[in-house]
Image 1: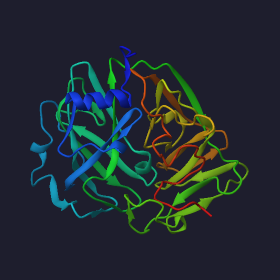
Image 2 (image 1 turned 120 degrees about the horizontal axis):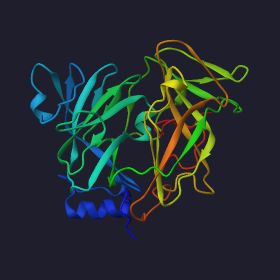
Image 3 (image 1 turned 135 degrees about the vertical axis):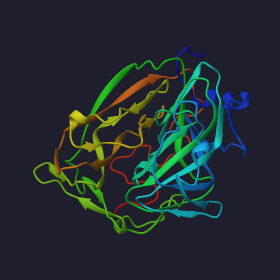
Image 4 (image 1 turned 90 degrees about the vertical axis):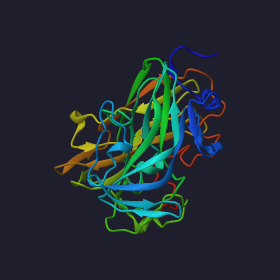
Length: 336
């Protein structure tokens, strides 16, 4: 049965593709369609920008890509490196032709956020990032800014995902989560600056010690240094029922001088027994050193209903993160 409101499930996304609500020049891949979201594939050209921007009401993104804003173009067809500290814009292969009752939101994929690649979606006429207005017809663009590691991407690389909704968001419940700093072994990892390039399509291909430093807690505390990037885990297990989807809430400034996540979508089936799993926290400290303690609140999950049943739950699609604890991105071999 289909509900009036809620997040579109994989079965509804497939029907939407059949109806032409989501289109692409290349055939859709089965692994693009997640239980409650759709992965987006990069197009063939990246534009190195002088600065980030939003087109504003009534303006098209492509019309802004002139010599004043674009520093140079990068061909992604054979793969290219996107450098740290730079801002790039890439049109994704998927376009939308939504009916009036559908709108959406975007997020980085988990693997994107865990290597500190800041990715946001832009649409024509956008006055905010990552928001897809109801009834939107047009292209989508990924703004990409590697913050710690330079990354190798190519046409077809999937860095971000969209979640489509029917009707206004209707959160069902919220769950707070806290930071786990009492683990045996490392309690977290701090990214090493000036490391090598990470190929974002290469799985388990890197020794994590070349890119990360393990962290220990002293008296249940760690100090976050300004401008550094960290990976931690939540103390609580996260379970997303089959009829719900969840999202980490945006940054809550009252919780401290740090950002607790980049990628925020949790699909139905995450953490379902026997694969209990925790949330991984992608943490970037801000302007001053900041002490975090074991059990300190760092954010919340907001749950929403699905508007229809799923064909496959999370974990039934070969995910790298089902049943995770403290875990680096899938690009790295397990920590030894």
